Every structure is written in C-alpha cells, then in structure tokens.
Image (tube, rainbow, N blue to C red; front, top):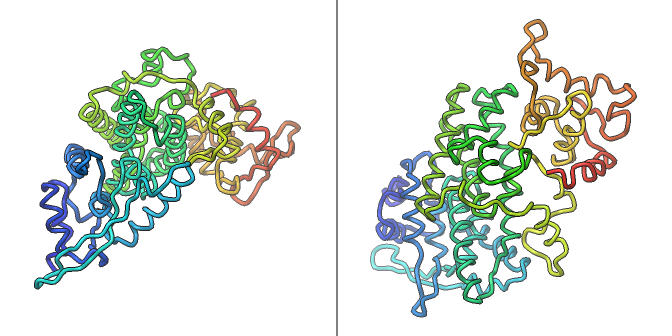
Length: 439
C-alpha cells in the first residue's frame, strides 16, 4: 500500500490541521481505504476535540464546516459515497421547508497532487444545520457517525436556544428533533437487542438486567430511580418524556454499545452487562464535557405524542413528519406489568406492526417481548425436560392454540406463517387504538 493511503495516517489523535495536511496529499476521488478496524481506538475526548477543531468561520463570523473535512471525520473513505449522503441531506433540508442553498454552499479549491501539479475539486461549506442533517443521514454503524449524530444534536439545540433568544429563525424545531431521534432509537434498539443476544443475553431476566445496566452507566440510577428523580409517574416511559439532547445521548449509548459488542465479539452475559454500563458511563462523561449537564438533570418534557400531533397538524411537510403508525410506541426499556395469559398477544401485535410487512419469527418475538413487558420471576427459567422456558412456551401457544375462542389469530388480528406470525390490517388498527395515549 502506498504510504499516503495508509489509514493509520488519519487517526483522530493527531491534530486536525495535521490530519488535513496529510489528507490534502491524496487524490480525493480515490479510495482512502480507511477501515474502522485499522484506525487506532479514538477516545470520546479526542472525537469531541476533532469536531470542535473542524469548525471554521467566515470573515463575517458565520460558522461553517467544509464537507471534505467532515468526510474525514465521519470516516467515509470515498468522496462519491459521502457526496451521496450530502445529496440526501439536501433533500431533507428542502423537505423541511428550508432552502438547501442557504446551508449547503458549493465551493471549489485547488489541492496539490504531487510534482507541483494541482487539481480543482468540488467542496461544500456546510452550516451547523447542514452538518446535523449530514450526520443524521450517515451510516450510524460507523462510530464517528454515531458520535456526530449525538454531538450535533446537542450543539445544534444549544445554538437554536441562543438564536431563539436573539429572535433568529430556527431551522429545526424541538418537536422535529425529538421525533426524529426517538424514531432512530426505536430502530437501533432492535440492533442492540440482536447484538446482546449474540453475546449470550437470552433470557428475559438477563435482557432486563442488560437494559438496566446501560441506564445505570449513563444516569447512575435505575429506571425507577430516574422516574422519581425527574418527578415522573411510576409507570411513565422515560424515553418519551425526554428532550432532544437527552434522547441524543441515549441514542449514542445504544449505537455504541451495539458496535462494541459486535466489534469486540463480546461473549458472556456478565461481559455484556459490563459493556453496556461502560458505554453508558462514557456517554455521561461526554455530556459533562460538552454541556456540563448530567442527563438526570435535564428536565422531563411533555409526552412525545403531543409533539407528533403538532407535526402532523403542521401545514408544511417536515423532514421527520411521522407516518400514520407513529402513534405506536415501542416501549423498549419501559417494561410493563401485564397478565401474560390475557395481554401477551396485544404486545406481540405491537411488535409485529413495527416490523417490515408486519412479520416476525417466533424466536425474535420471544427475544423482543421482554423489552416491553415484565416477565414474572421463574417464568424465564429454562425447563430442562423441554429445553424451553415457561414464558417461551406461552409465546408459542399463541400459534398452537389458534383455535381457542379468544386467540388473536382466530379473531383475525394476526396470521400464522412458517416459523412466525404476521399482523393483519385489523391487528394494526387494534394496536393504533389500544396503545395510543398509553405510553
């Protein structure tokens, strides 16, 4: 490999100017061959410093980022791939009612390509809002992208508050930020559950402890303690009562725990617990460094349902306008006390309607349900004679007992498919009505 393309020349521990100096010596439209596994592990502190150092100002004092610089920080090796992210971000900007030309200003610059020759390349001057959109449309599986999503969510909100106080128009509302990040959390919580399962977290009790460890790392408190500290009701879903800054911190916790579990091939239940706690603690430290405010000290806000309704009622389309089924609340981590025999099928439907084609395998349903409902002590223990647990058998009975009078398949809310279930339109309508306002 030519040394100028060596990914170790682009680690985040070097100064930003130094990194850019080396970057400018490469052909920007060729693959830089930057791979996550080849880059030395960056600390959260170094990531914060790199993003802060990347910001520039015009002669008029207007803050901006260069897209080529942001490409490097977000770990995109090829400009054409990063350009696709920028184009998606420009579309999102336009759909949110903003003019992309105000936030994505195309520019050109000359770079040295060796032997005294120079080349003219396309670049963009990005506003803070453009950086936020670019991060949100990036690949969150990249550690740098996931961090940027958190960083810009927090910093953008701080900037918007300052601009609001000065009477300057805000490009992205708090409602939009909350709904967007909350929906991202719903999606990535699924990936986290899958990664935890791969590490050995399989029983309902283990999933409950695993989830709790992440909160304890981030907040230094259990979920019931967080509710009490924030003055919330005993059964209140804390994720739906968070502002955008707090949601962003939890999103970073989720994405980075999943990444760490997979990248380091973490094995063992206790090791998975420790990983979730450790990542939560590091995100807490990052928040304290960026804003000086601990997550538990961020105030609880009104239910996100009200924000969703306001966005639906808005006359102009917004970037993150929720779909019709956004009233469905994936109450992951907000486990409920339910009667398994009477109410289990309702939560099974809730999970199904959020899946592609409203389908789910029986094994995935068994793994997902503990994120929604509390499993009674002993129900998750394996039955040595059957190689199954009492809880797993109850879930399987949803299909095997389909001829029972009150079975949700017989009632037309779901269908049995090979190795799983599919919700019907009738089942989706039931979920929308039953769960609206409950969480």
